[in-house]
Length: 171
Image (cartoon, rainbow, N blue to C red):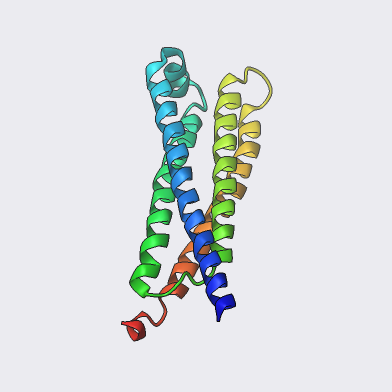
């Protein structure tokens, strides 16, 4: 009995740690995104590059993704990871899936942002060669990393769904 209580407490502590990591990631991404937006709007040369270079819109997409998939989604993930098990009156279905979700989502998001930014910057600065081809190769990586984010979100949804199965029986 004691062993099962200790395991449950350790698992609960680990789950709480990951919920807080989602919160901390949300805070970090919001600071990055808000700062990035202030720089894009406040530095005339950067604003002009983003608005008028051939591929500047890709830098805007990077900024948008860090805000939406970083700041907003991380806040939603943290909130629902806390609320749903409470409403369902049972522990999260799989702590392992929470961990996979956290790392996969962050890795995918950072990859997307880096490659969006690189495509926008390099495509906008290109003066020779074939910038469209270079940009399309970089955007292929955005797609790969975006698929990781999508997969992480599916894992999250599955984990919450499995947590709620049979909730009526526990009330």
